[in-house]
Length: 142
Ligand SMILES: [Zn+2]
Image (tube, rainbow, N blue to C red; front, side, top):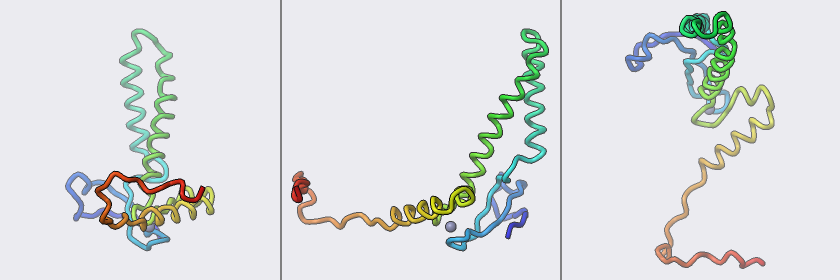
C-alpha cells in the first residue's frame, strides 16, 4: 500500500525530499505526503542542535538548567510535526481522514458525508427578484 520514492517531476524545492505515495481508500486517487507518521532521525538531530544552541546561548545566565529547555522544545516540535502530518493525510478530494478513521470509524464516515454534502451544495440559481432587498418570509410556518 505504501511505498517511498523520489520523483523528478516535482518543483525544484521538493525534488530532493522523499515522500510516500498512497491511495485514498474512498476516492482511489493517488496521494503523497512529505510527513512520516513519526519524526525522522534528522528531525531529532535538528532538535538536538537547536537545544545545544539555546543551551550555549543561555548558559551564562541559567547554567546547567538550560539543558532542560530541550524538553518543552521537543514537546512543541512533536505537536507541530504530528499536526502537520495529520493535515497532510486528509484527502482534499473526499475529506477522508485516516487518523480519525483509526480513532472512530463512525466519526470519519460522518466527516466524509459532510464533505460531500458541502461539495454538492450548489448555489441557488438567480431569480428575477434577486436584486431586490426583500428577504424571503422566515415566519411562514409559524
Ligand atoms: Zn480521497
